[in-house]
Image 1 (cartoon, one colour):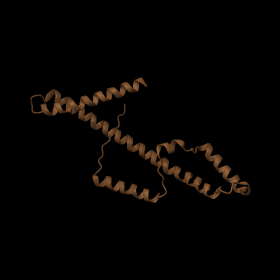
Image 2: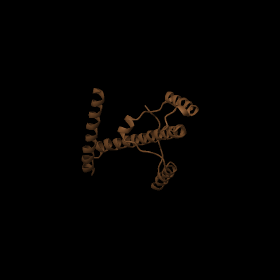
Image 3: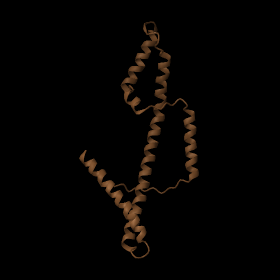
Image 4: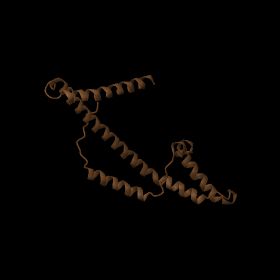
Length: 160
């Protein structure tokens, strides 16, 4: 089990400043394109082998331009390849950053939920007839619904 804890806060102003910085980055990358899920599935993807193939084929095409179809724009294809290569380290950094954000959010949520369960269980034991009955009943509804949903999710995962 993970023994790490997170102790941090982000003010609304800090969140706003961070989002502004992302907006600035987005404005630097004005050429970014959004694809639909269907377009992503249908598109040919470039990996390491196809990147090597692309480089070699474009070099060959540039050396033998007289044998190439007129509509083939080798220089444009080279610019596309250069952009693909330039975006790679940025994409790797963003993916790593995204993973850190998700892990930190998951840990913070887990810690908050564990504390809430402890408070709920303590209130059930010590709060009866001490002014917490309505709150406990409200929490029972939310906690029970969450447990049913979780059990259904676990049952679904076990059947897959």
